[in-house]
Length: 119
Image (cartoon, rainbow, N blue to C red; front, side):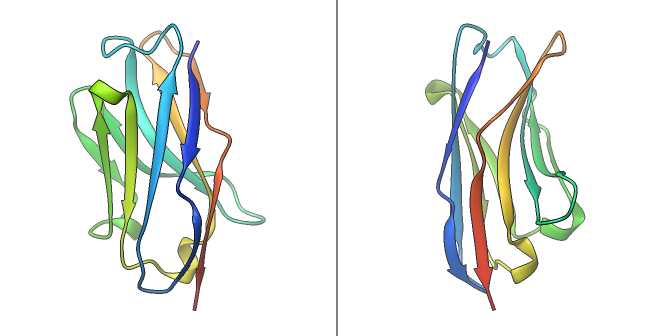
């Protein structure tokens, strides 16, 4: 089992920055059990989509629209991963969810945190 708790959302003007954090806890939170750590977002009326992912080998993947502006990172000692967001745009407005997937398949989601970028 894994529990994920997010923090850091809020309201920011276009061009501003926000940082999101996701703390993982539970019996299955170990480096050798979690394959991927990811951030997804869901805008009103749209499907939830991948924003960024960091794999167990520290490889990272970003959706094209955030490349160069967002950075995903992980602190193994704190069981925490982050999403640093810069040069935010109104189209980045969404509920952001953190996600982990275990090596044998199960995945877990955080509760979501609202990010609103005003123009």
